[in-house]
Image (cartoon, rainbow, N blue to C red; front, side, top):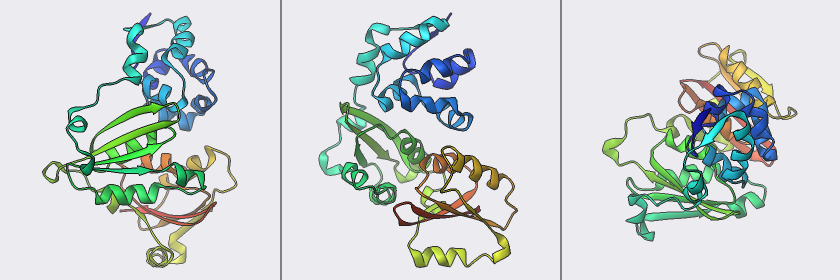
Length: 276
């Protein structure tokens, strides 16, 4: 028997009992991604039971139901639901005035079939140190949370308004606390001319071109990571993609790669990745 809580990472469950993969995948369709080794490697080590519950609109009782037969015991199970849905706001958010929070509702953007990542990165860059960006979405943007933590987000907090509305707050680090290389120096969303200028820095024989638009998930990420592993120094990988791959960006955020993205149109995204 192993005691767990809502803050236990999915990877810990899988390490303790590999049968957890099928058990958790049975709770909701989005969790079936855990059956794929690539997505499991990325998601499981970052996401807790509470976060997985919020992301998929399930509740802790669902996890308890499938994990208890595997020998897992939830601690504080009576308060588990309250802990995940009524979590106390941190002091930095309690003390913040609306004038110091930039609220950005991305739901209309997503409903129109567009990707709000470029605007999110821009708005977070414009937020003053010590102030806050609030992204309003219809789900918990876990990949974005981890991505901005690689940047200048000192802390984050997710407020559940309803099962279809989540407010994710990002507190920007104060300047004196900044130590990591800024994400915007490694990840840039470019226009056509700017993207072409970066591409022109490499000769034709220095550019490896791949098209992952026809691949089913997680084929694109698997293919791109495989190509980057064998990419020679001084060369670049040019990718035709059909979307901005946030999970891939999260995976590359703490690695020594520069990523340039040109979002041409819906279903047509150009990427250029090279070692810094």
